[in-house]
Image (tube, rainbow, N blue to C red):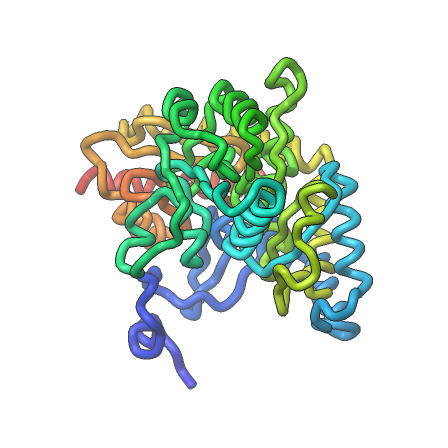
Length: 408
């Protein structure tokens, strides 16, 4: 049966507007469509394919595990799930793990757990969740309601109550709002879908202090910033010098995307004390933590957590920012470059506002795959294995796309 881009319009529910080609294979930092055209991939499945496409060790692990055990449910334990859980706790210093299939499910679990802790310790009245404008935490009704972008939640009827949205990085607004009714504050160390907006260190220190004062849990959504994306395995590690050297550590951390290099997985990490409130039967997941995903997760953890690998991520991120700066000197199309490591946002300057989608399409036409973060930001989340030569190739293609873009 032959398929084309038009097949999508015929048979798929139109939640997406995909680019005008059909991809069929990938290798490293490259993707190929059914017509044989090659693309340099700076999207990595929206920060998922951290080891690129068809990484030999990932392919080998999937093949070997598929021949042994794919799924058994959480009525039983299995060796691969327990191994990854042990490795994650050892690496991060958290005590307990709960596995899911996605970032949205991980955030759903984190938010439910926070409310359950407050319910058990203080009663039903302590249920307020504080989130921030421009945030994004998933597409389930609960997680999309907690996210701070109304365009994703409008039109789906009554949304869960007890959710308050505040301006991001606004210390005064948080201090005015947080109270004994607050059970949790959730934030992204760098807002991804919101435009690659980093948290302000001073704000982060205050969030931690106020959460402690009002017995609210601090949740870090590291779905996009985690697994090496910003130059450390999790972004919170980069806050270790804040707060008088005590650092800023979340009570619950959510993770997903790159954790299994393309196989669906998500997780939350937390302490023994907090985890104890999820008693048997209070939460669950049919597929969460299946042995196939966890076997690949161990490969990712071993590879990405290596110091040399993380140094490479930071170096490639700096190289991309340097080359973007050079392109901006030529075309004057970017107002600001933001992000850390290989999570990069280039905000379009005023004359080009609302045109990030057009630039994305032009990049595709020139053989370069990129993302957007709203109408004004070009987002780059390449595979973490990207090399200097591929960066240069990608920036050459972006140069061609920007020439066409600015000419229009």
